[in-house]
Image 1 (cartoon, rainbow, N blue to C red):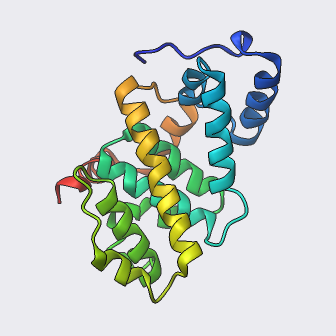
Image 2: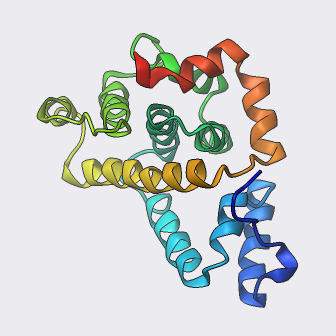
Length: 199
């Protein structure tokens, strides 16, 4: 059970209700994490702006951004965000086989060297203490310019916030991401993703 009860749609101010209904129409559900943030409307507004910027006009593929979110969340151990990001990757058009193989990105031939470099950094940066090194940035150099690297770091950092938020609150997973995760991954595959940080 979530440690701070998410607000209901009826408890939100009218302007926030409209934004949440837009999200619901777009995603098929309203995230419980967002409904908990709604207890502090200014935080919710600021966070929505951050998400819109990071997932908005982009110098790198938004599907890769979702996979970065999945890997950083796996390193941090946040199953809520793992479910959301893998569903999000599918929703923006990442091939289901690739989403299913994300926990094996280092060896799967579905991933390019450029994607592996970004995902390696995400995995290292999601750990506590942070394991990102100069070598990770050297590995990015052949594939990404400074703007693209900044976007990668922004995604990793956004999920640093979300991983802490959702694991601390024990945010309840909504039906749609739960169904997506349980349909796409076997329990063993999900556990492999969940325990990547131990490898």
